[in-house]
Length: 91
Picture 1: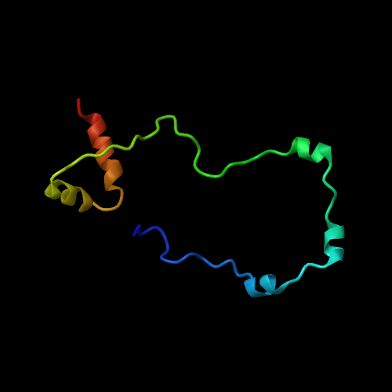
Picture 2 (picture 1 turned 180 degrees about the horizontal axis):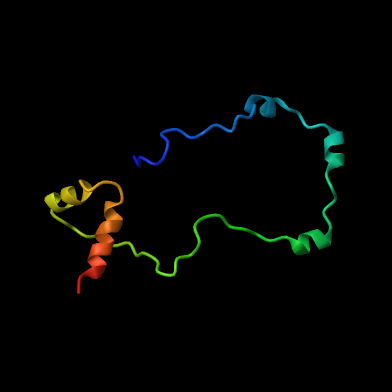
């Protein structure tokens, strides 16, 4: 596991059981604003995920000797990135 990340996720400190037990009342629906055509026209869809890379990676399959992989892994986290940087320097 990556040392910079926690083993467990931080809690939201919210009472999820209380939220699950809540039953919506008719009055709560009346509090919601009416959606207008103007609101929908201004709406934007935001997709999650990473931004597109200017230099995207391509997945390949490469067979290497076990000792080579073991030496790279022994260098610690980020070994694959360092390997890619080293391979990009080869001419």
